[in-house]
Image 1: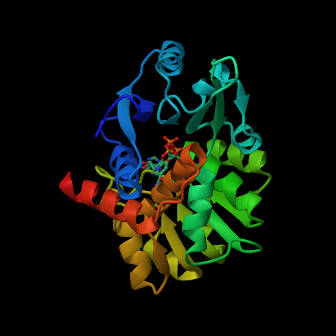
Image 2 (image 1 turned 60 degrees about the vertical axis):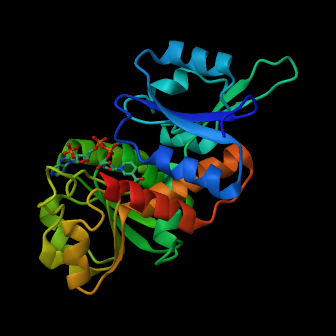
Length: 276
Ligand code: NDP
């Protein structure tokens, strides 16, 4: 029941209609009997959008493409890890005594990927190969370093890959050298595997036997071609909904202080994915 006490949450980006986050967070409010609502909002003018959210009394907002970096210029404070990653995916408007909310930015993507990986392997002291050098790779890479992993990174465009590897202070592996890599885990952070690239692999299938665990952060389709090939090579696999679920749980905890049972979030995400 939406009424005068309903607390407001949402996601800003452009586009936002593809986002699974409303299904996940609204299921959490329902399961915990909390009077909150989470709505998708297409925002083009970020500064005006943030002013509006503040004025309307929003408490927490997720940030998605293309605003994750640009939003940092408009915040009152930024969490140190989000600052290091250079991207914010979560805003928390904290009430102040003078009624002007303080808007602080966080990044929960790195927590999500670490917790997803931890379902199969503790990253501490393990070697992990990341494929990709985009926004998601940054968060996954910084997360792994926070967790004490040794990180290797490869990317189709070598200059971009080397740039991120330098920033992370980790080793860049050119595509030609991938057959030499043996690691505890492999994480695909590229969009390869997602429609229209759903029939493609981000790494040659015959190399998958060199990894114990294979995680894909692509979640549509849920069982990507990479995960199918990895299972066929005897690897333990982790799908992309896990990262989404854990990063969402971290947001929900930050905004409300409440822990949501993982099954509530996972089932809501699966139901929404199947509905599409
Ligand atoms: P970016 O556009 O920032 O980065 C894309 C990456 O994919 C680059 O490394 C790019 O390589 C690589 N890539 C794209 N096409 C190809 C190709 N045909 N062959 C090889 N490499 C390719 O995207 P993001 O990092 O923001 O997102 C990447 C994926 O992660 C998306 O599918 C997104 O949905 C998913 N994601 C999932 C999350 C989750 O919670 N599960 C969270 C965030 C993202 P190059 O540098 O050579 O162009």
